[in-house]
Image (spheres, one colour):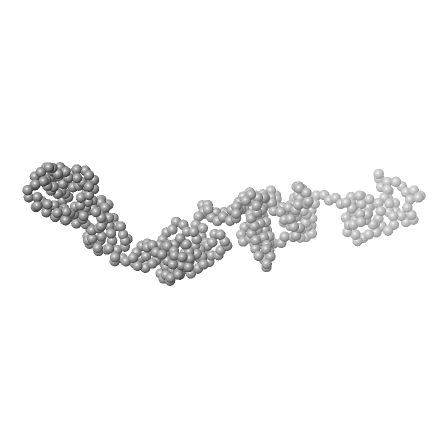
Length: 470
């Protein structure tokens, strides 16, 4: 009668007739009354004992069958498709050859475990070799008055460099370099550990210290504050033409364009003032008025150079201006020869008095509102008024001579009266009328000249009477 051989799940593996052997699996299966079954049965037991140890996988495996791969020295199990490692790792100082995906390898030289990805060995852990000792992050529990705290400690060469914590606490047991653990990362104080390198941002800088550890490691207290008044002992350089902006609306700006510097008050119609402390009193020597563009100067002004005024000069004070210089120059630098001098305003527009140099006549002149006369100069004086009519004022020669064409006098003496006939010392000059009539009377008594004969009532005793032809 034939044997029906079933698997664990009940499925039929083979049906074996009497006196035959089945080789459809990795083992020999014997039928009833098969001669010599003892050798085959013993071989089956040996194969099971060694898990079919061989360099080649069994040719007719069943799902769940074990095979010891002597090439990799791994025990593998058939999953219905292929043989896969059953677990554990291969311990050796060098990488195993011909590994399968998922294989584990214990590197005995470094005490590290690797997994094979199907193309390369990937480190599982630890991240440090046995020679490096404990390095990297380690999860630890530290006791505190507030209960146990789970932290991550960063080690380097078996030395704890930093502790990462979600809260601030003080460890109950002493931790070298960590008297208090802060929320975040706390560095080991005994190592003088620091964060070094580039950082895109930081929430705060500790400004409690001002001692620099080197020329390139600057204490936080030596940085200028942007949120409070601060002081710098070094020069402050703004290396941009955009310059300096001051004020909540940036009213004051100092900018540069083409190496030219501009100081500007940018608010409309607002002033720019320069003040000083004069003996405890604030004074404003320079005030620039935004609404008018006027410049106000208070105090004495010293100008070491030329002063050029294109507009009018207006001195509102009635004080007399004084000058140390021996000369006051006007019209300097003017390319055109024009009249120039001194103008005195007389209270109303157009009503002015002038003393000026006339370029046309090359003479000084003075006058009021356009009616100007030449100022007498000694060099213009003449003694011969007849030869030089209307060309200057008269002056006698060294000998006292004076020549004129005509002379008209308004009076005959200082009082305007006639010259007395008894006056022999007067130097008054007689008029034409006086000369014409003086012959009518002369001497101490009356002398009469007439075209008519005297009558009985004319004259007195002793008088002379001259009769002349009509």
